[in-house]
Image (cartoon, rainbow, N blue to C red; front, side, top):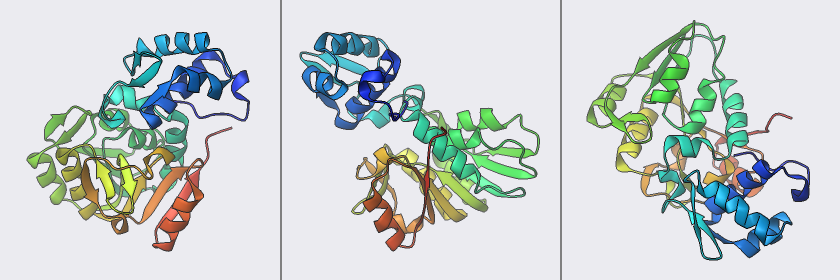
Length: 267
């Protein structure tokens, strides 16, 4: 979904307003029509029409007086649905993360939507070896000259990635220069967390296989807990995030010795 621009909410096109309405519902899980009308400076009738349009996509459920996210957790949505969330932030993160990849590197990429944006920025690399458990990532990179692509194998997970014992054992046999991955929650107490034990297992194995661990996380991931712990924060070397991240999060991470790269969407 697109981030807010420097224009006022009154200047937004209907499609842009609906994107931002959806982001509000994801962040707060439930909102009222009155709250949205005040936030976007439009009539309640306009908000009702917006909610009806968004509901047709299956991303939300309209309820009396408002709307709720279509799933108990937004991170259990299908890959296609999650790919629509915070699109501009993910694109900026993917571009910035790609600058960390050098010719001749051996890297691992997980199957997340943010990592897919990184993969789309790996054009014109030479002698690059990529290990991945992500079906979408593999489809993006498999045909590119200069890139040797190796998939883990394993059980196909609903998030369009390969998991399970076979995938983990494959990862345990490799060593990579850099890992690029994402999670659904980042807190000081729980560390990095994800939506399932299968997802957490493969990401933890990837972390152990990497010399440098790079986490790709937009601002919505900070302060959020998911279901299963993936790793401790101190296992991460670099975090690439977007420019809507809370500066206090950046400060605390840097105090812990983690390099933080703050990316900005293209003008």
